[in-house]
View (cartoon, rainbow, N blue to C red):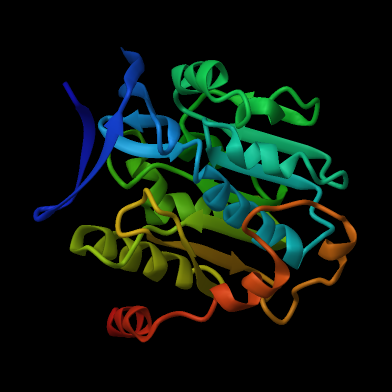
Length: 282
């Protein structure tokens, strides 16, 4: 008998992976958590039936959400990561010796526990002494912080369930207040290929564009995400992601599987279809 994991990407599109076995199934206070194994993608995590990460392609997402801002400002010292219970973003951040403080705010302790067990490569950075994990709502946490972080990475789930509040004007306004004068905000920005995801992308972009003088989108190809074409947002009070790209990143000698400075420059060149959607949003 064949077992398949299937996710509905739109009313008319489904994405499926052949599953060897289910490794974990449980429910936390907030959501259903499952871990499966597939021959093609290794272990993969789902939350409320939506695929979050797989062992095979997680590096693309985590490198792009982390190294893009770090290459623009190599002097970042204090970082807030909202979400990211799988640990992959923190794993990339702790590779930077200049970073002094990483606060990770994850609402669901169970996600971290499950990922520590089934994705040890991704959670390897969570034990770094510079990392503090706060198990609370990111929207509530950010309200009490002002002028504190050089970089905020919003590594959230999609805009429903526990992550819904992380797509609001209140949340991003509080992020703006929590950043230092030259702070950078990076967030996962959904896709544009399917209607529901495109609507979320336009909503987020409109909110952030109204809060920051510099606001750009960039893209990556992530095979297991809806359509495979995924966007990230870059917003800053000072730094332009292209004009201020620092040559100092190459001197660090970090080994990456996806990110490089040439890709950095190219990923901000958006297809006309996305530009048209953003311009049409007014």
